[in-house]
Amino acid sequence: MDLSKYIFSMPMQVRDYEVDAEGIVNNAEYLHYMEHTRHEFCRKAGLTFRQMRERGIDPVATRIDICYKHPLRLSDEMICCLNIGRQGAQFVFKQDIYRADGVLASTGTVKIACLENGRLSRGEALAKAFEPYLS
Amino acid sequence: MDLSKYIFSMPMQVRDYEVDAEGIVNNAEYLHYMEHTRHEFCRKAGLTFRQMRERGIDPVATRIDICYKHPLRLSDEMICCLNIGRQGAQFVFKQDIYRADGVLASTGTVKIACLENGRLSRGEALAKAFEPYLS
Amino acid sequence: MDLSKYIFSMPMQVRDYEVDAEGIVNNAEYLHYMEHTRHEFCRKAGLTFRQMRERGIDPVATRIDICYKHPLRLSDEMICCLNIGRQGAQFVFKQDIYRADGVLASTGTVKIACLENGRLSRGEALAKAFEPYLS
Amino acid sequence: MDLSKYIFSMPMQVRDYEVDAEGIVNNAEYLHYMEHTRHEFCRKAGLTFRQMRERGIDPVATRIDICYKHPLRLSDEMICCLNIGRQGAQFVFKQDIYRADGVLASTGTVKIACLENGRLSRGEALAKAFEPYLS
Image (cartoon, rainbow over all chains, first blue to last red):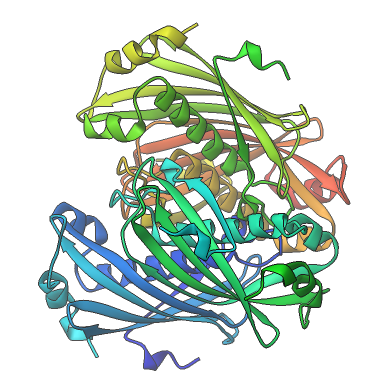
């Protein structure tokens, strides 16, 4: 687990209710972890999700491709990491989740389009905030 | 919306708590809808998820690739559809979700591996149940 | 299970992801089931939650008291029932959930206040819709 | 907000997907926050939920009574606090959630019974772990 590869990383912890009957974190929860990581990244970049909403900016996922490598279990701690790039008007997040012991739990690519006041936009407001981080 | 293309389809309804602050169903909930659709398909194929668990069979997602086309909103009704194929030992589900008015809301490919008593298996128990449906 | 005691009841089904590591439906999901039941009741009463939102009406829970009697498990089917009364400006929902075999799974009392355009209201719009059902 | 009244408190943060279409944290999520707080308390008391599961101990909620005082919103930070007592074989958690600015967001009473290997127990294993904290 080489965190220097990522422009943002944060620790997170499995909440036990996220684990399903199979004893592993349910597949949908990883999307929650990744969304929360993006929002914390946005906060670091100077623009919280709440502020976006107040300005009429709605980032929406258009595609998510996620691989599940090793399951997360009860009480596990993890490190959620991301990089960000652009593809046309969309933002592309590469998001990896590691267990605290360094094992790669999952890896995902998340494409985000940006609505402004309900209409598809070029995402310039976000691009400006993300500029120091775009690869 | 031509349901005859699918080997299984079922109506489902947005539960309003699944809608997030943007007024649209949160991206992670689609994975819940798709999982529930697979489990209902399994029931139709003669093997409920509960029975699988009792026999020590654990289907686990290894990869999910989902496109979000048109958002689902409060109180929306939808039709969840699937086809199933095999790729080596894994099962590949092609899963589409339509709004009740026929608009395609999302489309996904879900790969499932099969554990038996905690070990990766060839998934023969499931393959037998799914046999009439495999394309 | 005598459904004639209730002014509204509907079948619902456990979605397997709602079951947690203990093999039973997580305690928080019952609040989801009860909320969904209230919203379906509202639809029957002629006012969907979506329409409320569009009119600036926000019903919000102020107190929930729920007893868990018998756990719901994987693939269980249930019947969700309610009665409704008033207590000052608030609505009081008595909500019971039965397993399909008639065993009482849980029983709850949910108090709802009504905001209009962000301010606490007397809830007259809802009271009018609910009038035929109030006990 | 006088944290010295509580035997355990911890900071937590709203994850934005927990906020619903009304722009406030959905009522069911508070039960998730309270459960996670109890599990973190158990960890501090020397017994993680995962260890309980491994020993065949299943704490289950039998009653939850929760008041919603002030809503939590996007990106809010909170402090989750608890005290614990006993009532017969059950444990009674008094759980308060404060917004980071000190406003009381919600207050709950959660009763927990303890199963051992599927049978109702006196909860002695937990009682021993909790002993220094019981009031």
